[in-house]
Amino acid sequence: MKRVIALNLKTYAESTGEAGEKLCEVVEKVAENAKTAEIIACPQAPFLAQAAKKSKHSIVFAQSCDAAKPGQSTGAVLPEAVKASGAKGTLVNHSEKKIVHEQAKEVVERCAKLGLRVIACADTVSEAVALAKFSPWAVAVEPPELIGSGISVSSARPDVVVESVREIKRTNPNVLALVGAGVSTAGDVAKSIELGADGVLLASAFVKSKEPAKLLAEMAEALG
Image (cartoon, rainbow, N blue to C red; front, side, top):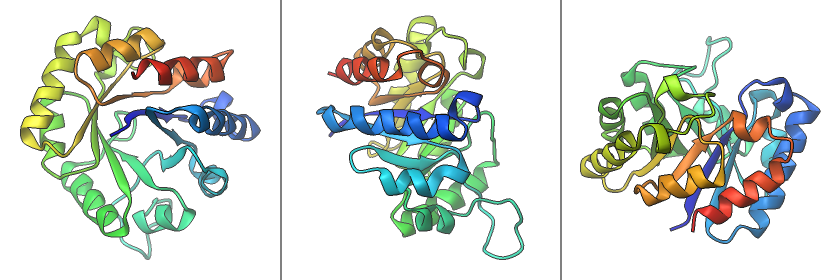
């Protein structure tokens, strides 16, 4: 099993329009040479289909997905639309896009029927356990106070990483345990793996890097 680097490109100016397209090209190029890493890019929704079409070695996920039914749901991103775009999965319940757990459960179930993978995001270990019960592909634990801080959860809160991995695997051994928040360097990635994680979820460190290709290649190598 390959370890995971999931890159949430969010809605930064540096990941909007042509800038976002270039970042996805960087991800694709690094993924082509990464032997032990599965690298996921999560671009903004208007660019999802375009990114998916160009993706051969990297994997494209949506940044979020809704439990709304097809029909009168203006502005919603449906699992069926994610599938139609060519993307392979989606994030759900990110701290910046929270949904109630029953909706997360429905998203996971509908995505499973469509052959889409879901990374369910959790603020706490207890929330990670609750989401793992729905059998998403992965659960990513991100203490919200560390998101965008540049201070990695693996160094600031190693206990959270260890406990998260233990409790996710205890709840559902088939679910990957990812960690995030403040992950900024290859050292942060290596430490997360050392603490038992299956991979990492990050955003600003990659999006705002002056050398994103170099950073991502180093992170991929750090997966071991």
